[in-house]
Image (cartoon, rainbow, N blue to C red):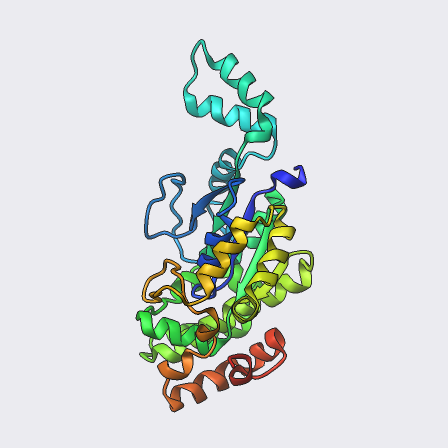
Length: 310
């Protein structure tokens, strides 16, 4: 696929800035935003396939062929593929040859899809290898991640991952017992700390296998949004315009009241989000999260959770 037409995947653990990144990149008129195609909870106007598990790993799915057939039709890799897709979706008629020719000749106008989806994290490697997507992967320190999920009241049912036995055997055998125990335990703080470990263990795998991806953290973007996004736009092959720069400054300056109680990104003081966990977690919870996530956090950030979140 030509570099300038690569589709883009923005992924990482939820509540780690994927909506912020996706919203910012979609300021470019060269991409078409596809919101969470892997999310099994709601329908998208431009994506119809429904996944059976949260964090579905497509390569080990029993429905892999069906999923790949759908994505092959949805994500055109070339001008020829795009012309075929438009012709098919228009319905075959006497006008089909003209429709095909028009979109084949105007293939420079075909959309680049921007898939904003934290739920696609475990299938990011598949999307990259099969569709040559440009992958932007972000994460967030475990204390902020757990605090955000606590504030939202978002728990996690580990049966979604345990149902995928091949996935667990290949990537997460060290967490199998803990995930099974988490199905019974009532402590949401311990459960979502485990989820952070699982998701970021996959990110560590990606860092080793795909060093060409764009990896960042919520803290890095919040500390220095202009430079981080400028580099991100360059990686994605999108123009970093004055309008984009103004949007970033407005969205991160704190000049407008933001609301973090939603999955939708709204303008906030970006730097203040780095230490927000300090007001949301008790001292006992901070110690528990730090203990449970320390080993993985030191591999991701090079330091302990408390240090990574300040």
